[in-house]
Length: 124
Image (cartoon, rainbow, N blue to C red; front, side):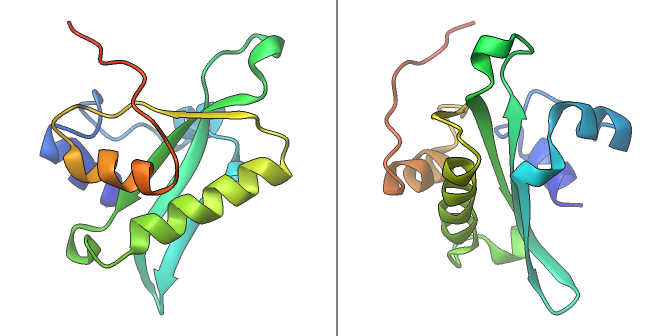
């Protein structure tokens, strides 16, 4: 599973285990997620999740992009992120914010290619 691969890198998420399907659906609206496939193989996925349950933040979403380890560096992440941005604009989302570990330079580079800027670095 691609998310499990991300967990195992120790620089993609604070999660220690793959969440249940119910937990996932609660925080990731299905209409705001996409999957890249080639035949029957899943190459990667991207999704938006809630940053807050407060109504004022309905247009602010967190971005997640995960690519199958075998297909990293092939442009899958870039294609997913571009499509996710387009989807978010169609849905009226006005702010997308990824939470990227500073060690995850490939993810930082990916997001910068799509116009994202580093606005802060969390410490402890």
